[in-house]
Image (cartoon, rainbow, N blue to C red; front, side):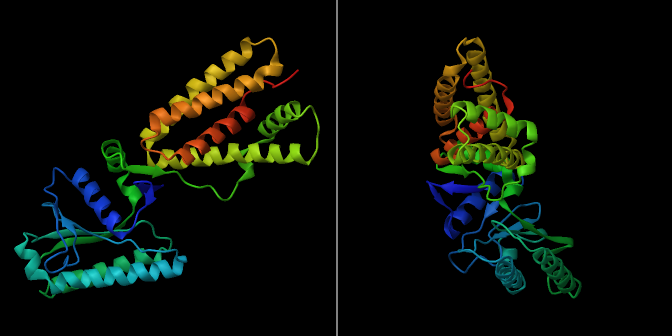
Length: 309
């Protein structure tokens, strides 16, 4: 998932600020120290811990193909690692005397060649160490490429503390229709046909396909959320389950199923309102609208109730 800052996507400066905040949380017990770039540059390191972990963050602006993105990451990694040798004495003055990890923190990478390049640079650094040119490098020095997902726990903490940060939920572009089996498709079709008085025209077919997509996107979106933030996932599921149960109880106790759609719509509006109340500080309203769509798709696909006799 991406992160919004004050309603906007991150830029290089906000990325650097964000990573500093995440490192302060993650390594608060390891003597984390940020290095301001003013007054001589960052020396290829923007922060370090007393336990030998250092990092350099990078935010490429714009959209790039996997190949172009790899080349930008590769060149930036090489340049910043070269700064360590050049500025070794300055780093020692800062108290950095034994670097065990150099973390390259980027929003994403899409080509495994950046990992191969990191391994190559790691061997080069260790060779300089062996040749007596880099005394501040540990014998077991490692290079890691880190992305925001590596800080999901810290991001949860930060978002709950700093309300200017919000999650930007993943946008599902490719639909895997195998995620909606024939029984669930039949459920959706039956309910929409009832709602449309059994008129099987193009509008009905389009509505059926739309709600099938809502259902599938909901599955994939929640899977992505769970991978990144179990806390956010559990919050959404808890709210969703409460409203699903409420919806089923109201519709089951209603003797006239023809007004079930009205009950359904009212409960969904309450569901959206509850999401805004509970999660509006960490999710955008557009993402909350997508969660409402996910709820519609799930209820149509999985609940056996009808909208009409």
